[in-house]
Length: 161
Image (cartoon, rainbow, N blue to C red):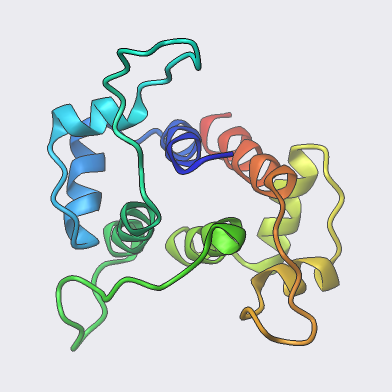
């Protein structure tokens, strides 16, 4: 699952409008216009050569997730407007997705387990704790695309009905 797909699924699950997407990017420190948001969210076939889709980089996704936290919860008192980007690799994009959406939506561990269950995936507290740990911790577990997809599916079921 690439970053564009993550944004498409997250936008669908939380029913975020294009104008709000641009605002969330701005809150995270990334200037993205509404037409650019549309280009980011456009799905293209792999056969198409004349694709006008903008590829979402890791830095853009991080800015969006940081902006989502600010959009949903408000800025931290005493914090600068745009948070510093979190350096991450392709391997832990899904882990950061889980962590930051959990913070943005004020989800508890039980809420997250319910989200996974709603999508048909049984996750224990221990597994979830391992997914949310800092990379390098002895119990850290890399979040695969299947977990991330089911988490976003569970969000869509909960927030869209």
